[in-house]
Amino acid sequence: MSDKLAWLGEEIKGLRDAGLYNHIRTLGSPQGAWLIVDGERALNFCSNNYLGLANHPRIAQAAKEAIEKYGVGPGAVRTIAGTMNLHVELDRRLAEFKGVESAISFQSGFTANLGVIPALVGREDVIFSDELNHASIIDGARLSRAEIVRYAHCDPADLKRVMEEQRGNYRHALVVSDGVFSMDGDVAPLDEIYAVSKDFEAILMVDDAHGEGVLGRGGRGIVDHFGLHGKVDVEVGTLSKAFGVMGGVAAGNPLVVEWLHQRARPFLFSSAMTVPDVAACMAAIDLLEESTELVDKLWANTDFFKTEMKKLGFDTGESVTPITPIMLGEAALAQEFSCKLFEAGVFAMSIGYPTVPRGKARIRVMISAAHSTDDLEQGLAAFAEVGKKLGVIE
Image (cartoon, rainbow, N blue to C red):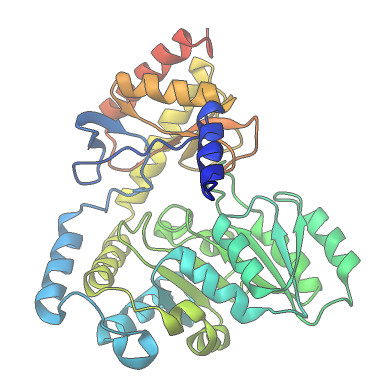
């Protein structure tokens, strides 16, 4: 009898041969500037822990106190018996922080996109999606069964072109874009995208997963960055990056949020955020509202690291945010570079196809407010050593 799963082994071998196999490292310490990775101490250039909040004592304490009062699990979906007063308060705080009328929390940013998009559009509708949008947007769009029309990356003129071509062919239209693109670190021209979507009376949605805690006043995100309050219909985000916890959010027009309470499937059919996560997220909001110190440190670290990397001769792509791609081209080179960095005490993973297009493999460095100048200088020295050894720089 033939092995019906033999093809999986062949596919996995192909990934290994092409340098595309994911070697998953294991952490043995809390998140921070330094980690214990596979038993070795290494400088952390991988985590999305932008503000260093994942192990902040106030956030940890808030989670502990919530467990003592409410327990751990919610025990149900939000619509049955899973909505605690903590959830209601988090939704209110998130709306207030974002400067909108209403917000709804989800279990993650990924599930937020899976909930929002199919609730807003369906078979008779169309989605205009940036060609480099995150996988969660792509999956949410597919689940909606709406027609999906891609437009050129961060190109409002091309968005206008495809919307002109589709005019009259749909019932409702949704324009959706990442705010900060997670692989390249560039920022969507949301003000121009808004202008185009307004002309076509399209619903406008932005995924601000990598903009929260980074862009805008005190990290309030891309809508605040562009001054588009009241103009973006729904802003989706995550609480697992700059906030340092776990969860997702959709904030914006109260009519949209009310509809999501009725039709967003992850909200209706998956248990609510856990108690410690909810309490920890509110503690993160407290910290962001009290001071801009962490956001300011993040940007100071970003400017220093990028400037020095460019001086060394590295290509950091189109990034204008703390996401710093070190462009290397081929996946095999990127994997070798990552391994050499780890040997030098720096944890910076390679990223290749299908996460990024073929021929655009890279090391993606994630800068954090938790890094000291000494940390960054050690990282720069390691990049210089490995870059010269592998012939990437002179």
